[in-house]
Image (cartoon, rainbow over all chains, first blue to last red; front, side):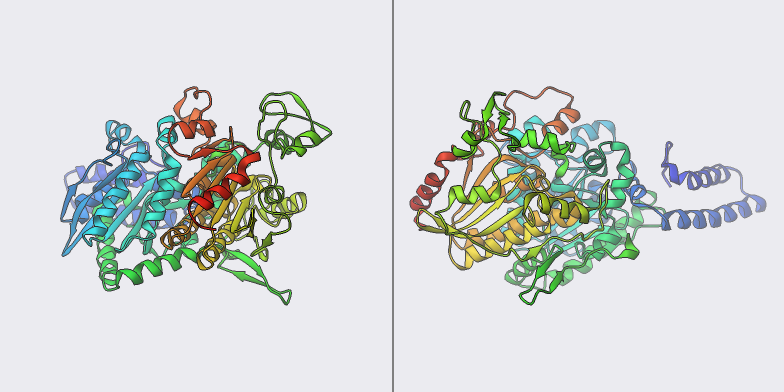
Length: 337
Length: 282
């Protein structure tokens, strides 16, 4: 419960209880205080469950962007046994928005590639708030090639508002590197697990998002465009971001229905930002289970199945010769709208 | 990915922006002079005064590039639907019908096979008039099938992009995933030894630029086309700076090393044929 104001608007009832609890816990304990604490805790659980069971897509985005949400670096600290950072793209620079290196997870030696947003203002600005430049994707590609060469599985943590939009980024081939990275990942002869841990911001996310298993934390979102961007274009004002968030169907529930994500990792009650330890433990157990199942397959089989996985994505009609139309893929159903 | 366009101009603005000939006379977006529409059409929609390359429909493009009567469409029976029940100010399902009606296309890409100076090729063209030439499930599926057929039949592959909209917002994550799907198909094609020539035209942005359009063995661009990842307005708004002149044009990309050649529209067919010959893929 590491909330500091200002919190999220819809969390106010939860935050109120949390602050009451905090002041009670600071008091000397006696039976009356203890009873109040027990009551408040029950109330906290009920209120939190109630609010979080009804999160709308725009509120989900707020949770995914929460300033206390665990980032790639937090998972490396909490879920992994060792992390040896590897810097640089051997071409232009070392993009802090893309964190890469060797890591150990129980008996597994792996390569971790993940967006990093940064916690303090100084870190955030060094990381460009998790928006990678071309050198970030080049760095990711160089470490992934290394992983393939030495048979290390790759774990990608996706958490970006989008690839960096700027003059330098365009000059150094932002489009080119994202395209190349997908091209490369689709053929890498080593297992790849991609997990959207916070924001899955369009091409910047997909640039490290082609893998054998695509998972997502419960309150993460993964979208073709930010809700603000979409609102700006289609509603002509950023103020309609909540409407765009609703229309884009980008929550874990929708994406798992659409067959885009294989697994949704449940978050602790009240979101990952309330309990880093527990979230990291759940992530670790997911990774161990999935690594175990992927490392049994031959690399040729993996690459073939990875191709088929992405090949089958899309929803369209196929007009048959007899005049009938076949619907291919799984659209969102009326009860999910 | 679709943030590149920043805001949707109304249809009149679109027409102006794309240089779609509306009346007898049109204003050239390049030099602002009035040009006689028929005269521009005679020159493959190039401004006779400043040689600005105006909008060309996908169909006209095929006529310009392929030998007469050789085009055979593939996968025209793949049709769009509204998988998310998406609605902004208008329902996507309605928007699709409107765009189909207005353009005569079923979606933003036409794919198939044809001959370029007697060399058989697999060819795909996107049309910026259909929802900004954006890629949804149908564009992705048609291109993936095109690339797979090119692989099976060992044909050279030509994709001519005119996509200002990038990945299509109205199909959400499904559009984003088409980038991975088409790129993966290109990786297989590449492994099989195929020759892929990507031609960038005005505009090629966002998710289209950041996938198949950038993956050519050879990348050609028409002069002065707008090509990039993030839209100029997005960059301007984020960075709060003025953009340098000529930013994100074909010439800018050539200067920074991302395209092989800038090719005038009148030479495109010839240069594609030449490249196929150099690579021994006829």
